[in-house]
Image 1 (cartoon, rainbow, N blue to C red):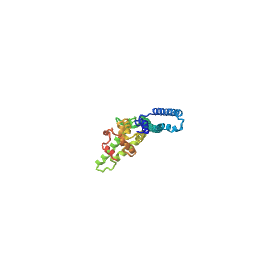
Image 2: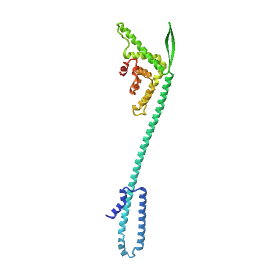
Image 3: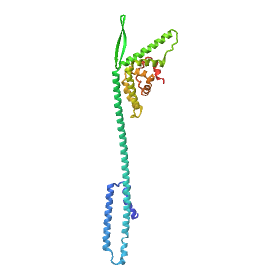
Length: 308
């Protein structure tokens, strides 16, 4: 192995093994620089004092330093290689540091996105529960007056009764049943007389019945229907959720606030034109999952609801 190759092996051995560190490498470099400086000083001193005065012997004397020249040449070559390797190691450390910085930036970005999503959900929930509370207030403020007739012996007197809160849904439901009974009695009378009944039936009858009753209760319940639809649509349009399954959790909260007769009234509201948009959302989010179908004013209405 030549001198230059030996020096090159000395300088790159640690680098190839991956053991060079910044502080250790710089210290080692300065040691070599100091060593070379000492050798140069000593060489100059020896040359100055040992150089022969006889010029004929100068050539022979100079040949003595051939090996020294080779030594310094090899050291210089090794120093260049060592410097290059140090630079390569520095670049490697810089690349690793940049990778760590990019990973940290990505992690920070993910955390920021998570925080943004959490804040968006919190804002959504604040509005959602405000709408729920508003719906409770609307229901609590609902009132309706109905006239009833009472017979006392031969006299018939009329009495006005006032119903409040969720009792209004009970009265709305009772009015639906009374209207249906009226149509059924009229149909039976016509058929008993051998005539052909040409009045409304099926879905058309439901529409007429609901709209007739709704006219009576619109002043009390109109705000309720609009607010409930707005609340469900608010959940549907929320963009802080990844899928509808998360939204359904909030619809379940709404559903849990509804009474049995309230669900029935909403069910029939969805069967008329004015409740078409609510029906789409109700079907998508299973609003009527817990409805008591035994309370329908006609069991056939379940099939009619499921028809497009």
